[in-house]
Image 1 (cartoon, helix red, strand yellow):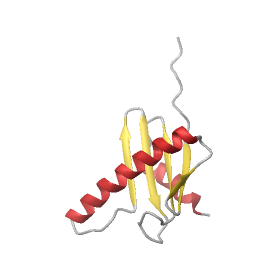
Image 2 (cartoon, rainbow, N blue to C red):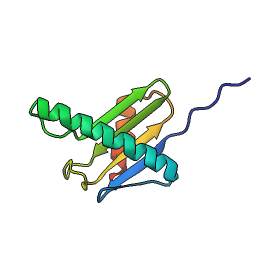
Image 3 (tube, helix red, strand yellow):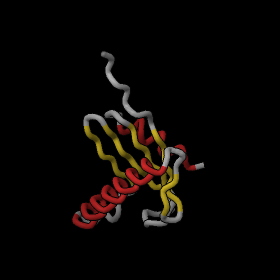
Length: 104
């Protein structure tokens, strides 16, 4: 029996407080929930260390990596950014580069 292939890289955009993607509504909802959790956790750490809100965040598990980044205009709920979800562990720099190049 062959090993199942991990889900491919899915990209998301953050615009005006909404998550958009061609990945399908179920994945958009899953990413949005993970994004909100990462953003909240990053804000709590930033507040505790007097650093402000995080401009990027990553969650890695053995079979999943979720990542987001803001494009520089700010880190508020309506500021533009992007994110990704992939079904494997991925190098942070590689994933952040793919997410950040969606800015156009």
